[in-house]
Image (cartoon, one colour):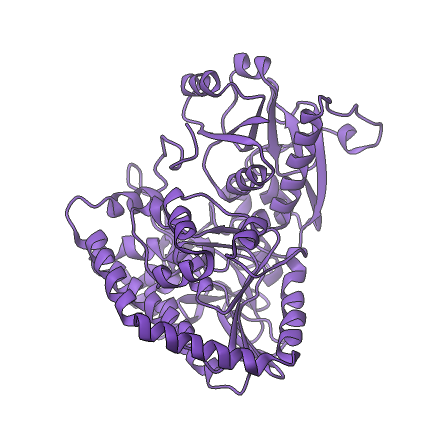
Length: 566
């Protein structure tokens, strides 16, 4: 079918719907909602048989929806209405939810239901749930609706007591009056739930040291205690704050927005508070434990564990962004993991984003963004080089969520790449105006061949796990639910380490690395890539700085991503 995707942003769900429908042979175009007339022009140009809106904040004009079947994806069950569906579900402690595909009508979220798919809501942040359980349910619902439309069918009739006949429940926007934390009354569980319901955006508005800040992310702490509301400690850029019955770790902060000013940046908490040394003075830096007992309830963004001959180096950075500090700490942890007597080392294996490359917010906040970009990309190179030069064991990159840009290339440095069936890969840098680095000019052609590597990096389109497996970008696709990925990774890693030929594979890997080094040293790839990166960062007229600023400040995008239509 000819399908037009209409979205307010080319976000993770829109990308996944695009990639999965393209894999199934549909002819697709993407239009970003920037006004009614541009949409009408796009519809005339593409003459779609179906319009799908995976993430839309605007209304579809009456003349468009009356002439075309327009389907809206709503992250809530039938009857649920409003702009804060998932926020309310987390805020209220729901354990099950769902995604509805409705036909667009005059009133938002009121049209006929084409598909409804339920999903669990485990205790996790909103953005994590949106990229995982909700994304899985949304894709299933979209595919069902497309199949019905392609067969010439119509939405099923409502059944009494069924999901289409659910009672209407309009919900208002979940504003800061409801989100606000009462540090004198709210328990740790309540604080964590409020923070999770607003983790990536909008955050929870709070007063900290006499100033307004948005708090982003929340993780319980089971040992530290103090006066409710007081800051207790720091760890790896996060701050720990006391509650009435415990404490929470808050990884990121964003200043309250001043009238007429730019959108403040979301930064590691201690970096955000760096202009207030009086706030941080006297706070102990609590070391982040690499080994963490199962009984502990605390936060650490890098952890290591062993299961016989298998080592697991797990890391989880907010949104997948990796600052210079993140890269250096992960590189140090990798160095330690490489010293352990294991034959298989698994990187990642968590349920959400694997990695997304440079930390653009930290770079934007730097006194010299070009200089910080250079430090960040060199730290990424150091980390990836350690992986590529590991020749005494097999290294597996386990991608449970999405991976993009330098984060995707970090995974490509491993001997095997496993990913969950619901993940998404964006192995390119083009939308930031960068040539790219992290040794991709070595590792990507090694996996998919040079012509395919050029296509992947130049076309700038998302790749599904199924397509990635077909072209050799990944080695295994694990078709499990998000919450099952970690356990399945452990099971398969154990099996890999127990294979009879594991030592032969390690020896063959070392021989291959030696041959490749003799043909062209890794140092030569690094020099070539970083020469271009230096030009991107410091050269006159390069688009990188403007594109980065527009991205982190969330300035409206007026055109679709390259090669994706109008």
